[in-house]
Image (cartoon, rainbow over all chains, first blue to last red; front, side):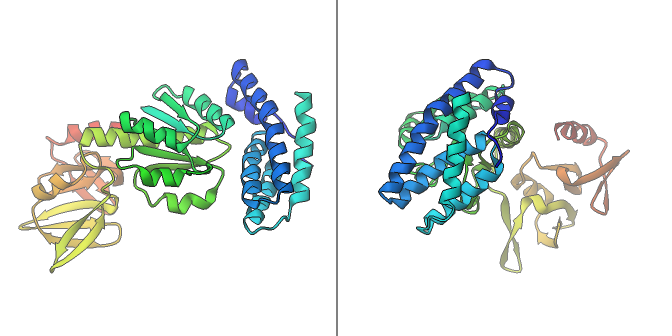
Length: 105
Length: 231
């Protein structure tokens, strides 16, 4: 499985350490909350909310340079619109990988 | 250009702001986490450009667009390509950017917005009017302005040459010149108006447009050369 990285963030911040820090801090604070919201929506089986949660998480996935995972997230989001949970396991794996990575930042 | 950012995600707003800060001509007036706040702001303030997320809870970006009476230029920023087709139904939409945003692509979109800004200010024309109608045998025929490459005076008539077809219309060069956007068209001779963007090459006192070699009046040459510098 591909590994999360800071390539995009480095490129975007263009060497500005404060911008880089702001973006990393945001990921560190927002990602766990969005992940929690996602699992809570899953529990209550509110598909519209799950889709919304996945949509938000998808942006973080792309920011962390996970191109293939982003495609999986896209498919999962698409499936959710049809009230279908296909790709959930793959998506959950991505979230776990990101959670592990974030702890190293 | 004065702009506002509308996106419910803080991360997205920070990224858009970071990119805006790398472009001197952009000035961020406000950031909004939802469309309702932006509507209130726009009731009392004027902006040149809106950087707008589509996927927002409750009141999404497209609902927001539909609610605007006099929309400024808008660049859509989203992770959803599914809205692209609907989005381009609106003339004031400059571009459609997919997240994650890249600086080069973002700059291109801002350039497009600046060109529109420049055109609307310099030519005094409504840039949303990208076509006009001509009357031929009691039929009104729509012509897409950018597709016109040459207009030639022929006595009491003018010949309009487009990429796909030629039309002969009972009118004068002077009349049609008044209707054409000055940024795109230029009268280079008493009998010819050309679309500047369609010029292939210029040689001495003539220009090549498609397969037509058109003479340039000595008095019009300086204006033509000046305009080419702008391209």
